[in-house]
Figure 1 (tube, one colour):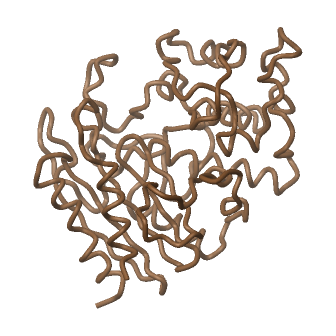
Figure 2: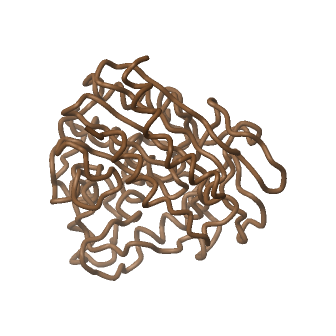
Length: 330
């Protein structure tokens, strides 16, 4: 039995318990060990409302904020390494009309690096989708709104702006860009894990992006990517092998963050047993990916914890930490 299989055997128990307790409909845990061996295990249902479908190895997940690290961060850092942008330049170098009616606006000084590290004064959340249904008008709103300034927090606005910068630099909409091998911007509903019954869209969301702002923007840098456990593990294995892995994804910008990623710290989603060389990220729909460069290992926990509603304590925070602790036990 591979060490990956042994790790999976002990780390699967918290996910199994969560599904059996009906806190989460279903999920998949996938691990990569230091020898590059993989193991995955599936449990529960991909959908329970209005009809039940089993979770499968090839189920597609709305990866939510994993989009930030798998797609947007990779693309921004690649452009920086190619000399197409300066990470310490303000966003207006790519978006000159950002807050164009106030030359002294603080927003015009925000840099790419600050957005990648969530070191900006933007608010943590903002319901853009309630301001209209025209994607171009909503982009204009993002760029011209006088944003309240507060202490740095994790904010989708950072990556919505990075997505707009990508669109300007590449001359096409995000959904016209290649999402990467094994990834997509939507999925066949018959093969996708369902997310929430959305009262705004008045339907169970499945195969289309759950995030309301991304849906209204018709593609964004902060959410929208779909993938399978295989594609997420392929991506992680590539980073471990140094393929397309900028050193900046491991370079701190604060005590909790690198460029795009979260880094190992007390109380974080990866648990307490990670090496200091571990980075990770989570997604609101119940997804997550963690990569330990010191051990040469990685794991992904993909769930549909918001199905059929986010307004329920799924225990996802404790579940992620419990899985991480068991994976890195001993």
